[in-house]
Image 1: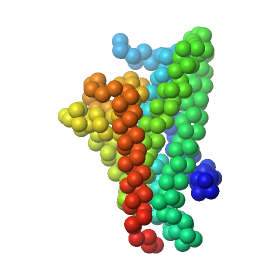
Image 2: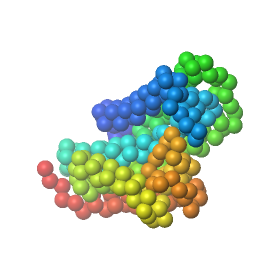
Image 3: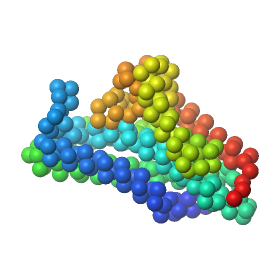
Image 4: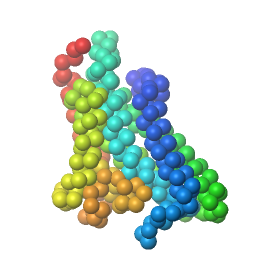
Length: 269
């Protein structure tokens, strides 16, 4: 627990934390405000942009956005934190004072998971607040903002989205650990993200088992505002609950690889 709380204090001050979730929240707010400013012009028969500021639908769309781009941000954040342990020499200093390598890295990731939950919650609240402001400016009723059915679904949807993004952060965390580099971890993680998206056009039956596509399935996000990493937009052949279970497998495997490599790697620099 000591390592975990130390990790929380460290991450709270990290520029990577502020940039990652600040950019995600800022982008979400900018999109909603842009829709408000244009009055929804440019919409089509499949999607009316003003639904972004129409409650209770706005709740699902905001969560869809967070999942869609949050996965990529999660990979970058996980890679940035893990990579810095090597490039900044932090891990070497920790090991020098007798701490367990794998325990330190796993405690650090646990802190990443908690900070991610807080960051996503703040991002969601900023999105809801901006959508409410947009609805007021557009003259759209806010009656649906208190819809009990929609509000009752939010905890489960948020938990699923958080777990999906944390799994993707674990992938970036493991990749950066293997590369022992922030830049390599971030670059490879983003390449996997976009590579899976394009590969989904040609190999949807295989790509649907990658963590980014599983994240979409677990949330039921197919296209729409979220966009996610799901290939050609075809309906997956696996259920939401199975997708969640497979995400758990990816999470466990990523952390196992991180712990295994950290224990055996030569620490220099």
